[in-house]
Image (cartoon, rainbow, N blue to C red; front, side, top):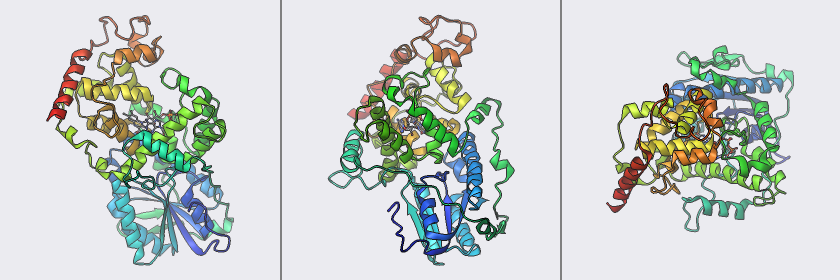
Length: 497
Ligand SMILES: Cc1cc2nc3c(=O)[nH]c(=O)nc-3n(C[C@H](O)[C@H](O)[C@H](O)COP(=O)(O)OP(=O)(O)OC[C@H]3O[C@@H](n4cnc5c(N)ncnc54)[C@H](O)[C@@H]3O)c2cc1C
């Protein structure tokens, strides 16, 4: 399906439109590739829906990253004389009628997009298909965000996998020999081609479809002082490619270094994968090349990294197979009865990185200052919030969405439900991370803590994980042993009920 437009039927459509969403790149973009091969004239459109994005919890950081990436993409498409139109509408509900209008006004013969899997996105896409049926204009949704289409890999009884290891085994058994080769970028069109498309068109209401991304969008700035660092992330496809290239030199050591937050040992590709500046196939291709073309090959580093990419795949499939996770519900319904604490002050201290537990605080400040947090620490702070403070995982999930530059519903929801023991294949409720042992094990010299907690800069390595009372730094928010025991009792009670 990915590249099967045959020579004979090449460019059967006169005018095609690619609707871009979280797939903001020209290379290995399945919908763009298929539109390029299928249409003699080609344009792209991006529709910003701030109201829906806000209702999904997308914060300024992820939105800024997305829109700044879009501005880069417009330049790349412009170099190929393929116009990119921009439209802002409040909500997904406004999209189907608007796309029908655009299709009519631009005389589009076919619409192409890459499929998205959360529930609201799927509903929106089905409504767009229905709206265009009336014209009639065909709509083609391609599988692109994942290696294989969610829903296509099932257990023997036909259900979606709920447990990672059998999912991984089945994936490798059925798809382990596939090269997952990236597709080429669209060919450049003539300058003439660009000139055949209008600069803007007026849509009903106050809406304009414009070829120029408004300056405010391209430069999207994050006003809050403490979030300025988010702008340090370079954006666009070339930045994503540079991160991938850079990581290819480190991948061999990934299995040894990846859990140490002070080491720059993971790829930091998550923001690029999530907005689509890098494709999952480009990542897999690099890792397979390191690994002799095999999923379980000779490089322990590549094996471990490929495993992480499969966790990403697993969570994306889960969202389609078990849409209840999109409805603010735990995967395990019985865990909805946990008597979560409503302590507003404890939650505020966790958010601000003021709990008095250095590794938790340093991690939260990394999130607040850079828009990103190391994976080991995401697990530590999520466990701390949901078990030691017994605060509802959904509040932590929302705070991460608000702050992360790589915020992604599937991975974030999966990670939070894993840590809170409410999810599928989650951490068993009686296994609660001890933040002090995690700190000693993964930041033994306290380098990471010192980098984000200047108030502990002078504390010796042996004391930094659990410092003595210190002016300017709070004492611990809770006793980790007592709170751990309490959480285990709460979860055990649920089981017995
Ligand atoms: C509570 C919690 C919340 C999380 N929220 C998000 C989120 O909003 N967005 C997000 O992309 N990831 C999330 N993760 C997963 C993971 O922490 C990040 O993907 C990873 O830290 C990104 O850094 P990296 O690109 O250097 O990862 P690398 O270690 O280089 O891994 C490569 C890629 O594999 C994928 N990946 C790695 N680990 C996981 C995982 N556990 N689950 C799913 N995919 C994974 C990511 O796409 C990542 O970019 C969350 C994990 C937890 C425990």
